[in-house]
Image (tube, rainbow, N blue to C red; front, side, top):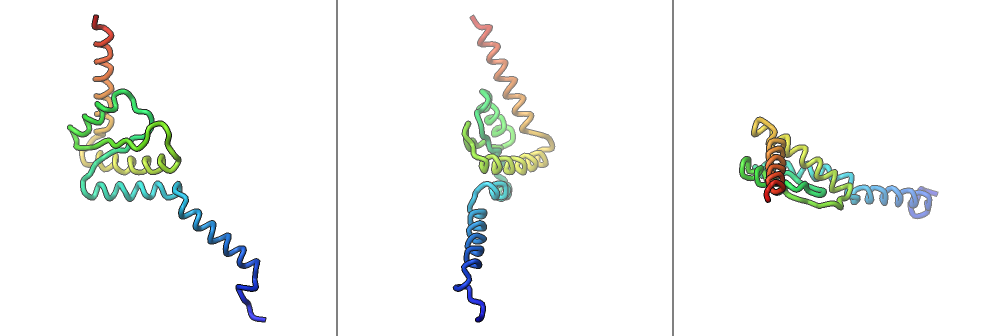
Length: 135
């Protein structure tokens, strides 16, 4: 009797399992989040849209940091999530920021993120000291 897929239950079970596994893997967001982050960064940089993505609870000087980046270098800070983040979001943001930061460093010849972060933190701490010493 010739081979028939309809008559071969074992083949159907294995084939269904393989197809299900592949479909699950393709639809599961985490493995492809870094790839999506890389593609999104390339698209943004292609139109000279420099930005950095932020997740997690912000330090108290994040607004000042974002203002300095925007005014000095035209780089935006976009908050994607605060304290609750998924594994896929962390992967996406990490890859996005890795590529975006490297491109900004190449363009400006130094690390604008560290510069603005240090300045924002120093300004915030100075304002806090002034508030504490004020009567």
